[in-house]
Image 1 (cartoon, helix red, strand yellow):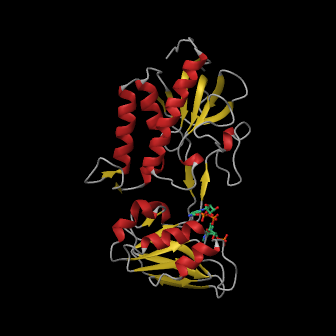
Image 2 (spheres, rainbow, N blue to C red; image 1 turned 90 degrees about the vertical axis):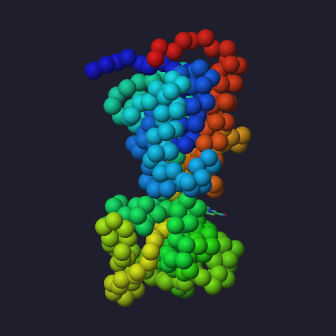
Length: 321
Ligand code: NDP
């Protein structure tokens, strides 16, 4: 087993739009960055089909293709991709130490955390197979495909209300699937609820939980259980948007980096974290916008800050990769 530690000036953890843009900018600054790609190389866009809101692609681009191209572009300028997961970090010591699941060690003068956030899913039969084929987690990204269709939104928090309102721009009907009863308080804030309730295109179903999503190539049927009566019924909709929250991926560095009350990395002056030389970009620091383009912009800023930080430090330590 190899014990060698790879030294690098910039180590980027995560390979979604934030991580790969940070890599591109760092590589073009001649910093030979290393990207630890993570459990889902390419990030959340690998689960989508056509991305129509990333500027520069008037005919849209498939999410996986966009990510493969971002990786290719970053590699072209000297990024080293490591297809592995970061599992432990020591950000208290300099240079920073990072180890991966496969036992590789890295020593980095600066770190960019771009680990993203994972949408919470229902984890019911059929969901995995139908992701991007009628089952989605982002209305801003995929709502446009449901022009003049009927869709359902799962959840009763602010995200669900916002997604539902947004979807009424396209869909003829949006059905809210809420697991709580009609007289129970919902998670969403009053203002968001009021707006959704005033929207004539939104219908409300209470005490319902999805037990199965049916279909082969696309969603055909939704199995619903009424948790008050324990009865099961079918719901025919063209699409289901799951809006039950996101989990920022911070677990392995939470002992060092400050997170806010929602669990996202706290950056009072983004992309700077509480640790000098450790920067953050993308959804792991952003519960609000969560877009590929905003993540890419944040990745660019993080890379530039890392470069300025390294320049300021006047570090001359060579990289051995
Ligand atoms: P939340 O955690 O606030 O809400 C999650 C919702 O999903 C709850 O209604 C919960 O129901 C429901 N839920 C969870 N699991 C399931 C399940 N398996 N089946 C059915 N329903 C489920 O997440 P959000 O993403 O809505 O919001 C996260 C944060 O972002 C909040 O602080 C919110 O205020 C903020 N936000 C603000 C916005 C704005 O201001 N414009 C827009 C979007 C988000 P239950 O209550 O029964 O547990």
